[in-house]
Amino acid sequence: MTELNISARGYNKILKVGRTIADLDHSENICIEHVSGAVQYRNLDRDLWK
Image (tube, rainbow, N blue to C red; front, top):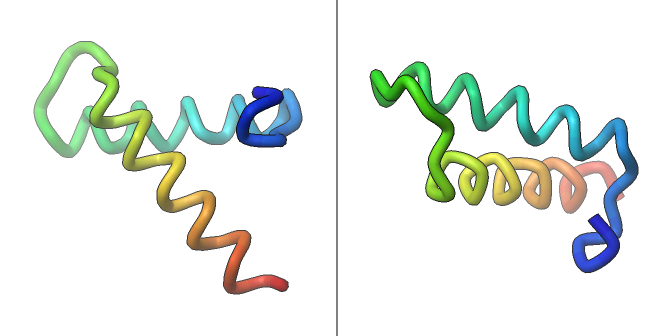
């Protein structure tokens, strides 16, 4: 959380998006690829709202 400068709320949102990505991938577990994708979406969202 400190490396990416995200709050607890942001961390929770990343996990939720990661779960959604895993569901779309038909995966029962959230893998590092799913969380990585969620972080990328969050960074993209941050860049658009500056």
